[in-house]
Length: 268
Image (cartoon, rainbow, N blue to C red; front, top):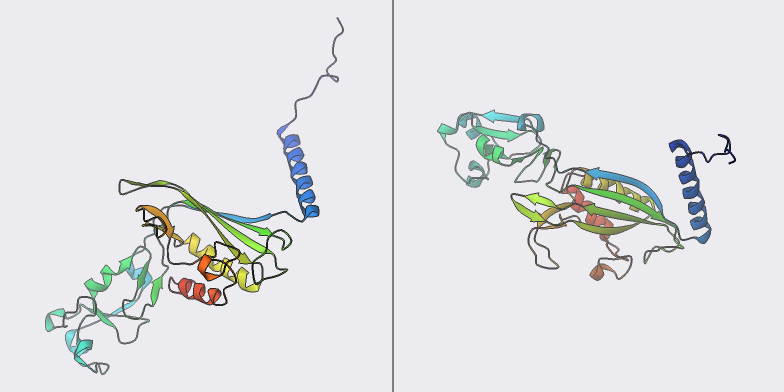
């Protein structure tokens, strides 16, 4: 019987060799897709956990405290309503000495310290009067992944943006339990034009996702089901066409509106 020499035996590929082959295949497939003008390029992937972020109020906002006499002598009061805490609607009295506070960025807004502390959530505080945000607003979004893909205009286009590449955002949100109640996972798609304005909105949407503000748990407007992963007040274009009525393009005021929605959550 003929012996097989060590040189002639089939050699097992090393992990490095296998990796090189896989990379070569991926490159070849990518080139074929480019030639066919129907490829997508993955730009980034971001993972978000469901861990809550918490910071003490003292690290978020600076407060100045007043005695009742100091507060009463301030020249900013023009009507009786300004003599009340706007949260509990109770008048400030002498017993409130050193319990009256003003946030450093707000003009003429005074609160009971205990009342304003109740407005402190996680890592942020929003003034209940003017809406100024102290700290970094974070949400209660479940765990998930954000992926961004770029398509050439020959492969995918947005109404109103001819010959402009398209960005597709894919949100993959995981199922889980909150308060003993189960909620299901979901996948959502959104689209932006690959231009200066679209790229800027993408930057802001990424910040919103990292701060867990994109989704929340609530009632679905579409199905009426409770305990669902739903949008959290930041509108996305989920269709490439159809206009505002179908959550698509064209929509002349969309970028302005979504900027305002993001700014309301402290994202600029």
